[in-house]
Length: 303
View (cartoon, rainbow, N blue to C red):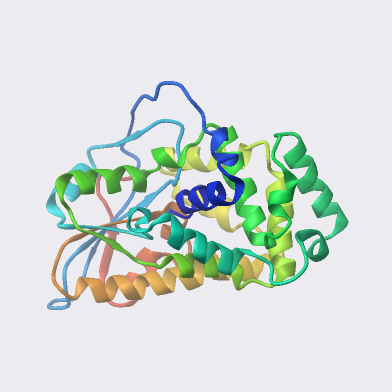
């Protein structure tokens, strides 16, 4: 969901320039039965069941979820996502973005190395993006913007992400939609990082503009390769990047798990969709629920 919000925020800042990177042409549904899917049941008397689906936030075509997912959707009463972007208006998004993503003083070249700024300038020149739009931006926002453009160039559209499609379906069916985070919390996870970590994030994004990494992530998800996806996300052993992974995954997972536990107290069955990276690793949502006494298991139809 961050990518969808970033797309909206970037369009506000850049007057739609990055949105012009969207790919055109017809889309064809694909069938995926290899979903990252877990069933979670609470201890007796402690609430309603959860189905947790790890998703990809963008894809080249609309995704038609397979036979292992549809029965759980029909049996659930509420859709839960990281953040329901349809509940936000453009003004609220812009206000949070400017509060979180805008430098308090100076410009971006004052806060990153000459090499990083030169790489961002070259990135913009190659795409006819005015580099001036990044002058007031903090490095984390520039990094996410680069990654959003990279997704577009790889043909991956947030509109085709699993959450986006299920949010639209829930709206058509009149199903309640609940959020696990606020917009400020999502952007705040990046904004709370030290500027040096933010710059390294930006530098890494600029070094991967060929889109190979995001294509591999989508491929791992389609194959249902949990171990491979966990390795792709968490294999970076550089100590300077540990705060990024702690903020974006461990801290957010703990916060989302606590909110799921509170939501479940009303006894409703919920269909939960989060990014696949939040469903793998030692502090994944399934692992955190299991630590709280829930019975958590991969769906039998899912590898």
